[in-house]
Image 1 (cartoon, rainbow, N blue to C red):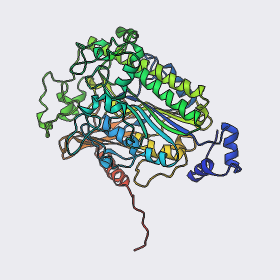
Image 2 (spheres, rainbow, N blue to C red):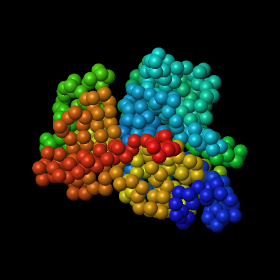
Image 3 (cartoon, rainbow, N blue to C red):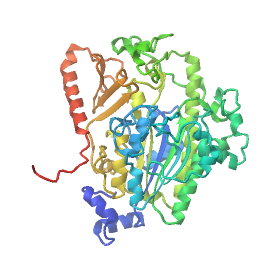
Image 4 (cartoon, rainbow, N blue to C red):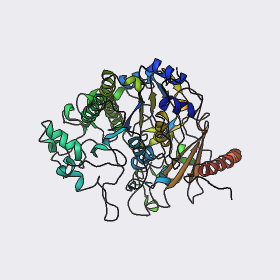
Length: 533
């Protein structure tokens, strides 16, 4: 294994003279002098435990192999358990409260600096295939959105679109989950070019003609967006390889985000009767904030939380029939397994092109998912591990230790600075994530001692911050006297909220102070100090 003593060794190794001892060692191990490529593969709304190597009820052979060839990080977290904020954090290296895309329905400003710009400036090719979601589905005159109606479905516009998009010099985009009506962009063009001229028959009105599907999606697998993402990702990698170009490439999958819908035979791959169906523990929400308790009512009243009138994810009844939930889980697992198949095709192409040994591959998800845990479904402002933890695998042959599992804390805010560090590119000062490469490479035990997760759907009524360290989790709500405190070691199922426990008052005060210090610590120092007075 190649070990660097510090970040400067890493940079010297990548950019220095081929005669340096460190670089000669690298050439000997890797058989190449080129800088590493970066391949980021993400799923959408995938529970951290839905990997076959962790959960015997699901099959993910290709991701399991990736984990065997690299390191599986068991404590990776998203910075926000919704799509836009976390995806914007991935490319900016900042928290949602810093880059501005703080909720679904907001957009990441085009003025924000992104990691793709750094890679482009360093001579890398940059591309994103699949889901972006940096912008809302409905734009305004003041805040226009290329990912919104009607331009979303203007296929002539997307056929000729050839502009940089948030630092990616090349993008091929789509926006729909399964048969959602907002299908369009490059995915629809691809379906037409590959002979599915009646693709609208598989999508919901008003875009399509389908009457609505339930668990089995009639679209042939060869036209599923997993197929599209793998095919286009592979084509781009092949082009880069033929031209001898380094790349930063993001293959961004849409599944297993609901709708629970997947083509056959994946819809029947799992027997609902054979699956574990999580459920609420009796009385566990009695000590929790009121919005937890409301989810367990048939017709809850969440009007007090809807300040803007735009609604809040998850603030609805979560009551589900157990048998129906089991069927949903079976399809959810089928969606993961189908995606795994096409991730395998991408990894196989990387091998076939001879690029695997010189490519850092990271697989993760933008946030987690509830499928019955704590009596909850989907997502929302409920910061249990199920929705804020994500699967996370890093592989870089000969550099990232193989066959290893790590408990080191990871957050997706750290991806951008870590990718830059891995390639010897300077990390911009405004990035507030930390460099995780020493941890990925097995050089250090941890790069951070805490995680911060933000969640904000409304300006004041839904404004949440969570602090997580090796053992404890504290969640506070803006201008509210309720909150959550869990001992993840003594209570890994998070059923005993210690917030109001007098026995744990000192612990709560200590963690509150640590949250304050952590918030102060993530303030960006983008301007260097150049004078002493």
